[in-house]
Length: 318
Image (cartoon, rainbow, N blue to C red; front, top):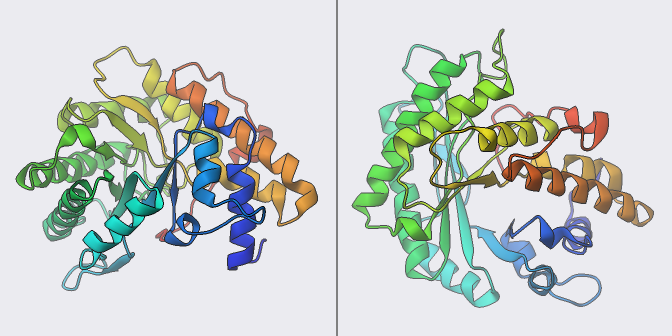
């Protein structure tokens, strides 16, 4: 592994943003505050490195999840209190969009989780966050993630995801958020990680697009999927299958992957300067694969065997 300290993180992000040709496939990068205000070893700010590639800087503005007491281990995301001041600061530094992650849990298939309390509280905070961002010139990415942990079927995942996304758009409407100036970052609809009969990627694509057709207004310009623990290859193939579907899709269906974009890159680098070219090549290959998937033209096979490794982490948080 690579030691998770500030200097190593700086070198890694510099490697990413200096990857030749990355801007052809990546239009924006979500950073932590540390990175947005950081300077690369060459003396150029991280923001300027991104801008040189034509990549728009973004910022994660939530402060993580906290227990939602009175529920079965459910959570709500914190960070609203000083959000307006922070958004103004991030805009001044060059950020033009933001991200806030809400986390919903399926504990079993009884329908008890996620509870309506958890759904409503997370939808409300997502809407408040979005309104505050827009007031400060930032495009909010609305991210209600239904975790893939569990044994549930794809049918149950579809039912829950539809309920969650519908609640979010009701609250966004209540807060008078301009939908044309937002993006949605949902989970794909798929079987739980421990489901005995996981649905194949074509079924994941159909179920996901159907839920979106039921819930997401056509005013929303783009849906940028999270990878949620899928392997790099699975995430690319699922996105490709969605874009191949011959059905109504009034939004751009594209990717906002973390683990499923960077896992092979990080493994190739291992914190060593001599591995930078190989790491950058791994990143570019994955970015290109996802770019092709956005067009419904990805043939599969990018990254070889390494790209099929799972990125799943139980109850994932960051």
